[in-house]
Image (cartoon, rainbow, N blue to C red):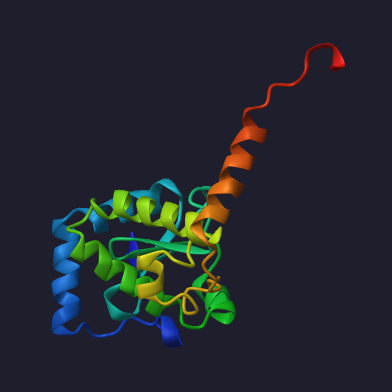
Length: 176
């Protein structure tokens, strides 16, 4: 189920005392077991990685839309981590910070908090990560996210209202 790797920055490393705390906490709060289930459902190949992370490569589901994502101590990608690190060399640092956020949120409460922060970021910048507190803490650049300027709230609310009105328009009957 979980294999070991010996390739450079992806090689398993000896865990520090704090990484053991994170590992035990994320197993106890059920996020790492959930991550293993998600990896299995997505038919990913799981292996041990650095800093106590479990790397799941070849994830085949289309959700979530991300180059990589973390559930507990499990980091998943649809490609390989060698490919991801060529594009985003500090990706595992970014994802490890998310694994700490799972621990700090006591596990599953991470998800509603994450979604609310994503909505806030979209509202403020039009981007799901630029003003997302978890993504900023994990390091936007390390995760491959661009920083975007804050758009004044009245401007964003007008834009959102316009999009909503367009989305709610019914097609005219008889071409009128």
